[in-house]
Length: 173
Image 1 (cartoon, rainbow, N blue to C red):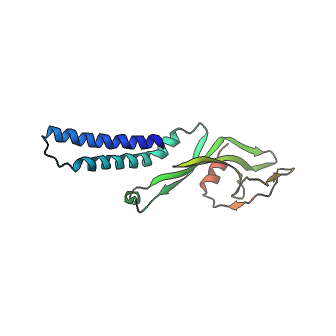
Image 2: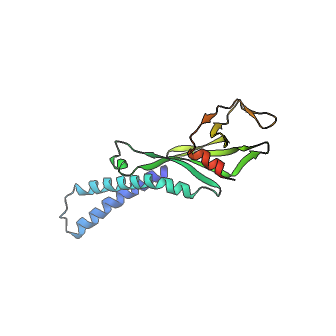
Image 3: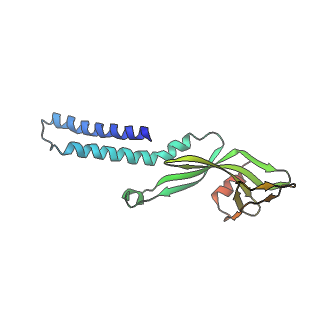
């Protein structure tokens, strides 16, 4: 975040400097108010560029085996351009390299889900998925695994057949 702030300030200085250079070449014919306008426009464009490129930059840094399962796009009235082209603000990645199954419950898979947000820390959550009945449960305190591979204390959520997180987990491995 701090580096993006520095980059935005540098873009503002560069925008103002460019207009000052053009004004110097033209012999001072441009109005003086154009310098701060150019600085502000350059800062705004740098910020917009940073927001739109965040998802692709973050996705490129994911390790081998991490698959993006779901993305959340953002639209806001104070960013009117997002209604034309929304940007990805959050996404969920599944670590397919570490998916585990139980020999007695081959239809159930345990995976690590990572939740990425634009200005948020990365959150990790183990997710148990029952691929045969299209349901999943976030594993938290109070969950116990019993003999035979059954699970007690899980809050199961039924999901539609086209749920991206469930299909990513069930399709892997």
